[in-house]
Length: 214
Picture 1 (cartoon, helix red, strand yellow):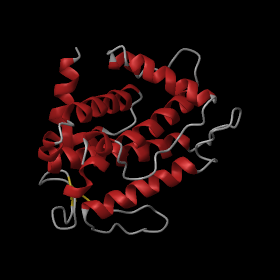
Picture 2 (tube, helix red, strand yellow; picture 1 turned 45 degrees about the horizontal axis):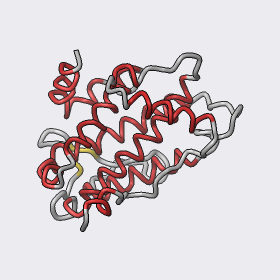
Picture 3 (tube, one colour; picture 1 turned 180 degrees about the vertical axis):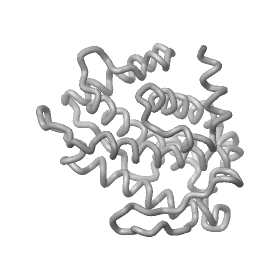
């Protein structure tokens, strides 16, 4: 596999923000400020912008990033190598989405991540939750849905770091993974979107990334 074809592999289809839309402009703003290298500043709500819209645009972006990062290591994350969805020996995740699967089920990591990414994709594609048209308001429960999405996306980062970091290093993707995760963590910290207890599996890494930036 050539490097370019591997890095363009995604686990699920990429979620595109319509070009020319206000959300597309916001995404471009986010990309431009990220390029400045100051991630703490890059995640801040741009002046005069709507918080829900900023969170929506970034949530779509993180879904696409994680989708691509996980896509690079899917061949190493199998039923045999990862019979449970875990983040180290102390953290194990069971899947439930509240609608199709109400009672949490124990399943392999690839199965769990498939459930998770499909569920996230369904939320992002729901125009009543993530309106893409100008002037269509976000629903009252938007923030709680966004928090659940980000909490679950964090688990994919946690699984990759704990169970597949060797593969990430073999593929020379660690800088990409670290930058993506640092951006994700600074974003959720800025708007207090994930409970500290949920972040425990990567607490040491989070502290290290934060201290480098002080």
